[in-house]
Amino acid sequence: MTNDILWWCGGHNFYGLKRKEKSTIYFTREKKYKLIGGDIIKFVLWKDFIICGHIDGTLNYLKVNFDKNKYHVAKVFLNNKLERPFMNSVNAVDATSEIVIVGLQCGGIKILRHPDMDKSEKHIYQNDDYDNRICKRLKNRVQSLSIDPTGVRFAVGSSGFTETPLHVIDIERYTVADTMNYLWRYGAGILDMLWDDPNTLITCGYDTRIRKWDVRTGNCVCAWTDPTDATLFSISSDHRYSMITGTQYNCLAVLWDQRKSDFVQMYYVNSTGSSQCSPIYSVQFDSTNMYCATDRHVFKLNFSVNSYQRLDYKSVFSSSCRLMHN
Image (cartoon, rainbow, N blue to C red; front, side, top):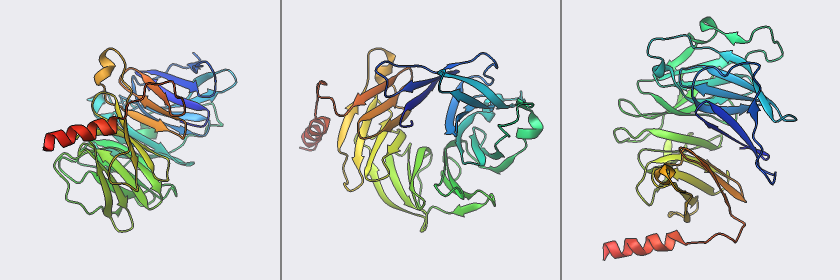
């Protein structure tokens, strides 16, 4: 999400929704080049491009034309490994001004330099340009990845079955830069993460908790437990005190204040149909709006509009908990 546009993908389709327009305007693909790679799993914004990681391991660089509300495929890192292609699925991607980092289903982590976007003679990059550039291989599948604000290291979250699920890696040396000291439960995989500042990492996942890490000491300095004991699929922060998590059940988003030990409020964004029980796979917010992506929909909640029927779910939840303990 930027100040002007909310980007969203579903399957192999990609959309940009102009946030300040009264009516929704979609960015559609110019048919100059076909979008290669199957379903989009993860994407990241980079300059005027969108880097998409696909289910077969392919990376597409999409060039956006804001005047025409169009985008086209500018460059492709093609994955030609036909054997077990699902193991090369791009589960996580992030980028700096010089490099793009991808995390794969097989546990591989690749660090690649961006192609020269000013040259148009080479559109598709084959195996020699892409497949062999694995800088690190974890024992478990990669599920999340985030580069720190200084661009010198990145954090990786894995499924956590046979090794610790959290790694902080030096970008230049390809070595573990910081070790997080924690006795993890089996399978406590990390599904989402973000840097609050260069020394503070926030993670969430299967262990139903938000964890705040000080990477200087390698310790978890604070933790918040989801009120419904649900897996946390996504998290967003205003980089001050507010956080919102997207949970596993019933399209539930939870608002948190880092200065408090308990959650602030719950928001159910479910609609009719199958999406009523969907997790929130991605959540973004600012001081006015919250956007939640479920299995088939994107929901918008305007914090400043009074026309909604408001329910104080925190008071309802607190009352239910008191009855259970009595």
